[in-house]
Image 1 (cartoon, rainbow, N blue to C red):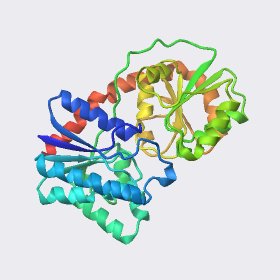
Image 2 (image 1 turned 180 degrees about the vertical axis):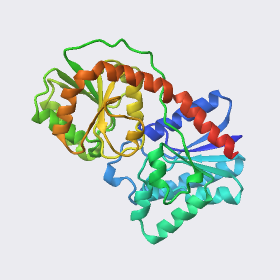
Image 3 (image 1 turned 120 degrees about the vertical axis):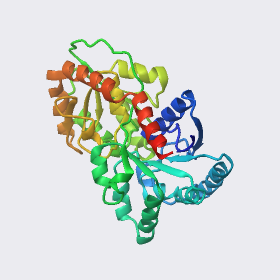
Length: 356
């Protein structure tokens, strides 16, 4: 089996680029004949409202990138094209020529959708784009999705027989010692974007007393929020630290020193950041959106908060102390049983083998 993996690789760092990197490295180690094609043109984080919009420079770069990809398909004699498209209508249809060419040359196509918004964006698109999307779906052999709830969301457009669930996974960490503390370290490790709920967290910290709470933030800042974030961190240096974009040992140290992970997001698939928090025995505070309910149970893994509600975040962070050690112990066990990167790799590999 020869596989061409088409999609984004770090950086920027996000769930899809990390998952692609994990799969590629594990496949090479497993002696799978795999070629990667990186679809990232800019290593900087885009503002959410600019993602999926037409950009002439991006269009030209896409054409150049697409010809390079066509060359790999024609010359490398691959059996399966494994694509990880975006969820915007343009992000999804960007690979329509690849899917179409693959069918002409009798290659198998597997598309891995890392999120829950694709069909919502197809619904909002014009007739022509909806028509192309239906053809794209028809020509694709299998779709990998992240959870049961996302199967239900996508079933109006994608036949259930074509969908396979593969749970995300992250690297195994040594279990840390859990102790009772009088103060807690709270970590927000994701891109600092409005849709991630970062402004709600800022508002909570500024509006309510956060005694015995220390906040650490890490991730790329959405360009439109640069001034807001810089002002916030300048004003709140006493209990808030921004660490920038972190990798390797620095990222590991932040997780190891954290008791609670927080992600008050407005939209998610299956966030790798929550799975990483589980792997480091962190309790979790998050929102009931997208595929999160498939990996998170309230009062078992942590506490749900309401979207766009700083008071809800404040109440959760105060109430979580009652069961903090229970959540931490439960989350590490949950991670080891379900969400290791090895389990992720094996499940995706099995899908490709069955299609092959």
